[in-house]
Amino acid sequence: MEFRLLPDGLEFKESERWVKLGGYINVLARTSSSDHRHSYGILLEWKNRDDVQLQDIALIRDLQGDKSSQVLEMLLDSGYQLEQSPLAWPRIRRYLFNETQRAEPATCAERTGWYAEAFVTPGWSTPRSNAKLYFACRGLNMGLRQSGTHEQWKEEIGKLCIGNPMLIFCCGVALSAPLLNSSGVENLIFHLYNHSESGKPIALNVAASLLGDESLIRTWQRAAHSLSAAAVMHHDIPLLLNELSQAKAEDVGTAVNSICSGSPKPRVNEESDSFAIGEHWRTIALSSGDVTLTEHMAQLVTAPFSGQRNRVVEIPVTGPLGIFDRLHGFKHPSLLADELQRRCKKYHGSLFQLWVDRLVSYEELELERKVSQHLSYRCDQIRKDAERLLGYPVSPQVMRVIQQFALVQAALITANHFELLPWQEHHSEDAVNYCFNLWLKNRGHGLDTEDYRLFSMLKMAIPDWGPYIRTLDSRLNSSVGYSRTYQGELQWLIKPDVLKQVLDLRPHYRSQIQRLITKNWFQFNDFERFTLNIVREKKTAPYFAIWPERIKKDLAALGVIE
Image 1: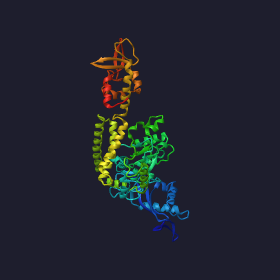
Image 2: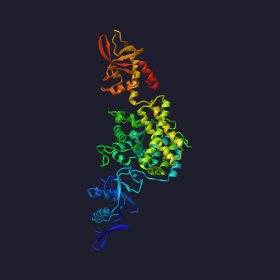
Image 3: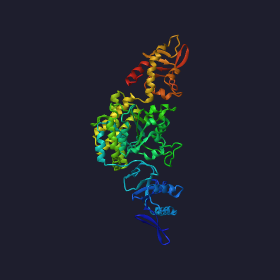
Image 4: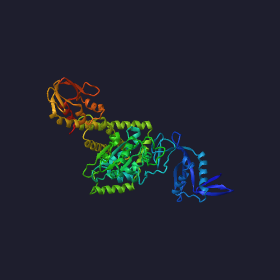
């Protein structure tokens, strides 16, 4: 078969004459996965009826198999002009296969984000070298669209963020996603909440404007029902989520677990592809809602988050102006929110690509070193401020949250160094500190969650137990326990069933009691049960031996309230 490609169409030679098959269509490259083991395809370039030049990747398995009609439908839907002959499409397929043999090789990216040689999105890729890398959309769509220039974004949107730390923080969250790979920080969700209308949705619009238009903002319900697509389209790219109250608790739980675990296992009714099942994905999600995620999922029978609780960072919106601290001359927060929304529709999508361009300019190891240095310094500063405020060292759980805020701070300050933002470095630093302090104040302590739960219940139990405690040498029995003076200090001997019930201990409670033992609040001689065997009235029985005054003093220092 002999073909010839002209500027206005593709022709086939039949009986010494040239017959037109369709509009201009060409194979630019032969693509495959980076390991050259799967995802073989061809990068197509064609013109539609309005002479607009388009590109997309068609996988060989689709073009050659039963799904070839879907490739044709994609072309026709884009406006490609196909001749009416029933032989036109089969002959175009033959032409494409012929051209595939002569095409130069290139890498096909099946999801967004970092590859060894580039950062890839559906609309553009930024290579570190001359490597050719293209994104296989496969019908998925994400609005990394650009409207207006970077200077216009800074002037029209960025300057309105000055004096509004929550807006600056949300911009930092959007910039942080490409740093996950270099920093080692795990997937997480920042959730802004307030029980009244406070302008929270506009924070998502501002964050989205760094990347593209408002179509980037997904609902929680949509995210839960399209986890495979989210994993493909938001790998190393922020995931923006809204309308929490309209989503079912089980849908939110599914999405939270998938985002935090990085496992995009599809739902039963979700169409997925070969990528989605079992392959890890990296992302940072920014969410807003009228309630906390914990409250929304309280109706679930199973415990929320299934161990992912500490990667959901919930920040209350508490200011009198809602999400805003400064109105920039507008008479009401709603007027500023409306104006920001209008501007976000007009100016968007320029900053994120410039940000990625600057990151790609570093070699992979150099970028990791720079991010690690920034992150370490920022973590140390936030930790010192938190411990100064609390009066005691923060727990490992809180330290992980500090690392997450520090990543946002590092992203913002690095963008300041790249001169991508219209505000000063101290604005970036202050914005993250402001949001972290809101989170810490709302949390109420710097302890691990389970520690605080046990400590609080123990603090409430001590005054309740007091009236029922009998001296060890008393002939009166006690339903709670007994007291004695040991080495000059008051000690209570609490019956095991009583303490287990009050502290709601699991049947295998060693790890829970260990949290109390490390505080030196217990004495024991049974290293399996952490109990103290005591002889009373000629009978030996096990008790949990605690130091009540020591516990009350330590809990007061930790700020544990009843």
